[in-house]
Image (tube, rainbow, N blue to C red; front, top):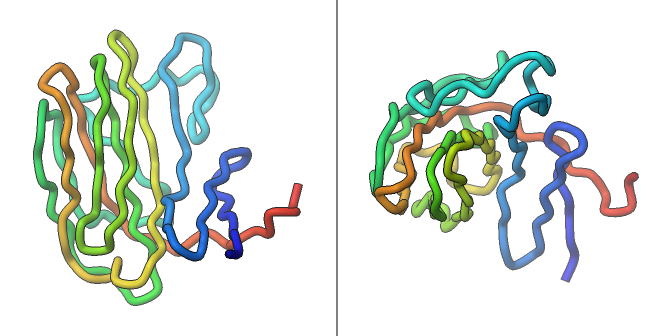
Length: 162
C-alpha cells in the first residue's frame, strides 16, 4: 500500500493511503500571542459568529453563520479538477464530526472552552466538483461557523520530502 502526502501551508501535512482519503488541514489557534497560519502575528482569531475566510484564490461555495449542535450545510457545484475546502471555526468544549457524505470523507475536530480555533481541510477526491452538503455533528455546548470553498488542489509531495 503506497502513501502520498499533501502539503497545504507549511508546516502542516496530511497524508493519504491507497484505501483512505484524508483531508489536508491547516489550523489556527486563538491562544493570545500565537500567530496563525494565514494572519499576521498581531492578528487575533475572529469570533465564531464570523465564518472563516477563504484564500484569495479560492471561491465561495457555501457558508453557515454561528450555529450550535448538528446541521447540514449545502455547497454549490464547482469546476472539474477543483478541490473542496471545508473551513470550520469553533468554540466550546466538545468534539465535532464533520463529513462530506457524497465522497465518504469525514474528520473530527476537538473544540475547547474559552478558545476559538479555525481548521481548514482540503478534499481533493473524485466527485467533489458536484454539489452536495457537509454534515456536522456537534454537542450543543459547541458553537461553530463554516465556510465551504473551491480551489486548485495542493501539489502532492513525496513522503521523503523534508
